[in-house]
Length: 210
Image (cartoon, rainbow, N blue to C red; front, side, top):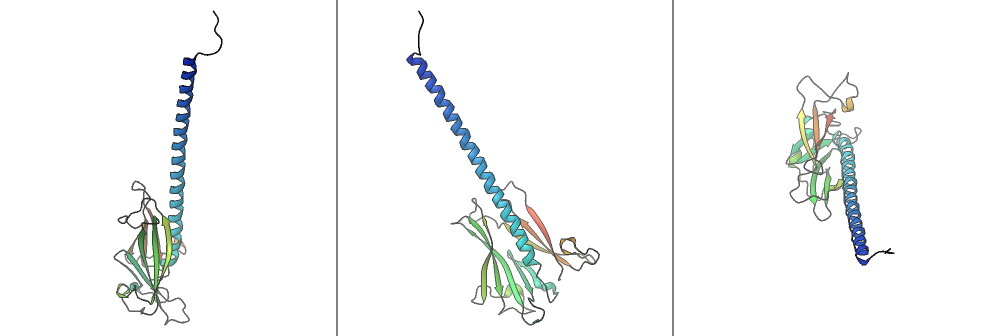
């Protein structure tokens, strides 16, 4: 005898199959969305780091301007200090700066601050002996980078080291004027990747004023 339509059992089986397909599609969508979001956040982090590198290069290359003293750049206790003369027309006005960082756990941000001190800044003063927390110090946020994995013990994103070139070698910024280099020191800036497995980014900054 010919049967028309579907039985209840067949309808239930079809419904179960349809529900399983929907669940699989939702799981696939969730996974794709997660990967897309993480990729977007990683790209944003990398962009912020690269912009930070450019900002640091501009700031650090001021070291020694107007004096050329080797003591105008100093790395001590995870802080980079530098000194320069903003205007050569007024050589008695000297500016001392320091780059220091902190982890903002609440906002999940790494913050690099630029400290400036002109009152206690002398040409012969040891840069790490200046009182950088008094009322004469201006503290300005220089670089802010979002990092969802940041904690109190997360190492600074940017770290610095100062090296001297062996005589008679000298450097020049950006490779310009290779025929007439003038810098005897350079600063290596190292940026940590957002994840432990990511490679570090390094930039060498020639101090052509020293």
